[in-house]
Image (cartoon, rainbow, N blue to C red; front, side, top):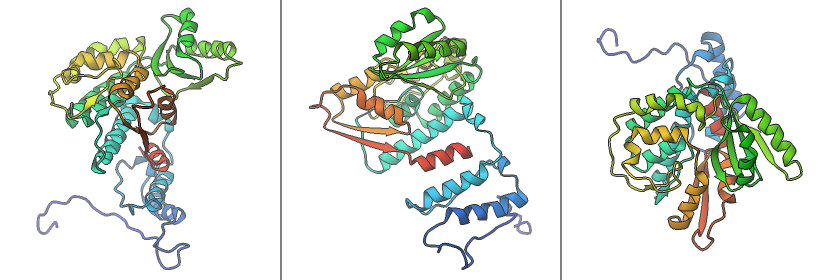
Length: 343
């Protein structure tokens, strides 16, 4: 290539194989042990796995091969990396966006044609793109600036509360006005609280005591900030300004917005103010699902990677005559776990 003055795209420093005829499993079925040994033979000798930024993998396209390869890569490459990096919204939110767009595109490739889409919180950006209201470049612009600015907000805490009517939880928050708020209405009996870490801790203790005889569910989310709370106010002006302009698209299907709980318009998604409000105001997921159930869906395809969200959907009371079928599509847990570890 150098003699021909051709462009050099890369240099292969080392290669290795793990099938020499004496491996513990035949080539027809991959072995995670053998695959990990192969990777370690390269990385532990020549490259620090923690500095690897890009991996190109060629899976088998099978239920056995792909999880094996992904798990092997995660086991070796993720060594030395701190899981705290995943808490940074500048990394976690674009990563979730990527997964959502990829899975939605896969469903479209399979011939699944939805009539509407609903996205929970940050998921609405992917939903708006999937529905045709945002180009991919504009959707990336929104998720980039949203996550970049949220990384600058003060530390906070978020608490999922379940098995208790949300109205009762709201009444318990009156003493914590201005410190803790409902960030997401996930179902009639499930919500997410957001606010100052000390105040959220106090609320958690109060709720545990108040509803100790009613099987209350309490779970602190592993997030660094108080999303959908007053903590976001400091970034709203800059967010509204920096994501402009956004190009208006015709759209292919409806999006039931979790900002309002109603169908959004093409004009909504190109307004910086819409996305600023979307970042600050509570997630009206319950109302959005009820709207979708009541007037649009006869079949519901639940695209998720979150078991809690799936349970919230199924707990929302619906008209059984309207919704005839419900299908669930979940990212393979092994592949998702590996992706999270390697990123």
